[in-house]
Length: 233
Image (tube, rainbow, N blue to C red):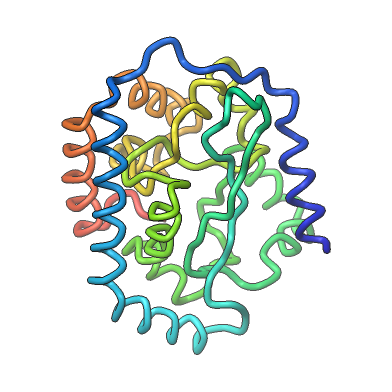
């Protein structure tokens, strides 16, 4: 019940957003091919990484009490005709203690730091296994399901929760016109070492310059970053 109330509040928080499509779009071929690649890529990833899913799920269960996966409510690509903000649950392997939100509320100094950039440099809520999963980006694998469902793309701007939208200001409409990505320009450009204003700039740069070739280059850089553990949480 509380979870549903929170979801409603999150959606209502963006209800005043005057959504409108961006002024420029890539061609129809781009969208068709991009969706096809998302389907094929997510299916391939789910099949290939199935053994990894099983191992990580077991380790999460053994490492700390709580569910195996975590669902984060984030803003979705918007339906401009309806004019109503949408959101969905983005899946991740759980990397934090169960009462992570309550822990922040019990520690005001951490809450203040989190509200500034929506992250903590040294997050005491992260479990031992969670640190490893984040460094290797294995915690992101369940988002392949979101991609297959059409909620996300392999490459796109970073996903955000409703409270983060205020950081995008006049860029909000452009951001919400595009599906969030499993990886993107921000993820391969420093990630946690990048300030929030810089994150916004990188997201806008991607949206303004998106193309299949740009997506391919970002995917290649993502592989390098994952292997070298660059910019991981």
